[in-house]
Structures are given as structure tokens and as C-alpha cells.
Image (cartoon, rainbow, N blue to C red; front, side):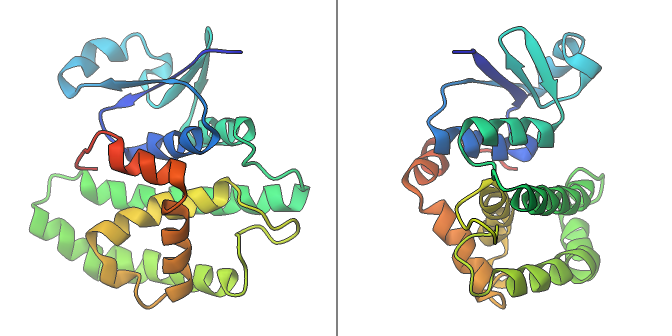
Length: 205
């Protein structure tokens, strides 16, 4: 059995989906969290100087989506139907792109009030709202995201983990999308994931 070590900052960010997947699959791993003050020196030892990375024994796997996809295969969350696999990749890629737009605001030099205004006036109406409308339509009448062999996949965790942040911060934004909201909550109630949410380190983002 390989030894796994997930290396990221002391934050949820781009590593949290993989943590959810590992929790769901009951996969043992080391969750190494780098403190902000330690990053300049630690960066020198990290492949390409970027995190997250996943160490699989002595092999480094970079890029958050590649890591999550690999973890999903370990956890039995990656579809074995080719079309379902492609659709799950597509939604996770889309969500990652959407999250990037939010990160741009989160880590900007603007004040909290300015960040909130930019989200309300720009990101939500032009990025989040159209995405949520399409997702609501897609999920209506479905138990899980993938259609051909309906079963839970990493796509469902990706949707719930990312939109769960919105549910925690601005729940009113999800209220117009009851199917999406129910889906997010359903995944968060899975015992292994619920336990992770309740017991994992609490960080601002």
C-alpha cells in the first residue's frame, strides 16, 4: 500500500476536495499544512514551487484537479463509464474555473467591503448565477450528477464542497436553486464527510 502525503497551506482552498475524497474513501494520508511564515523556505523544496502536491511514496503529483482525480479513482468515486467520466471531469473543471474567479477577489488587496461588492455586482451575476441555473436544470430529476450509470462520483463531492462555502457564507444565494441546495446538503450529510467537516481544522478559507 503506497504512503500518501497531501501538502498544502493551512487552509481548505484547492486541497479540500481531495481531503473530502480521502475522507469518503477512508484512505489514510498525511495532511501536511504549511504555515504562512514557513512558506518561503518550504517553497524551495516543493515541485515547481506550487501547492497542493500529493506525495505517493517518493513520487510527486502536482495540480489540484489531477490530484483529486487520482484520489477519486482510489476511493471508487471516478466513473467507469467513459461518458460519465468525461462529464464528471467537465463539471469539476468548470467549478475549478469558477472558484478561481472567487479566489482572485479573496486574495486581492481590496477591503472586505470592496470584495463583497465585487462579488455581488460582478462575480455572482455573471459567473455564479448562470452556472447555478444550468446546474439546477441538469440535476433536476437526478439522484447523482452522472447520468449513464447513476451513482455518487467525485463530481458530486466537487459540487458540494465548492458550493458548500457559498452555503456557509451567503446561503440566500443558493435558495433560488432548491435542487442544487438539496444536493449540496445531501453530500455534506454523508457520515464520513460530515465527520470531516465537523472535526477538520477550521480556517478562514
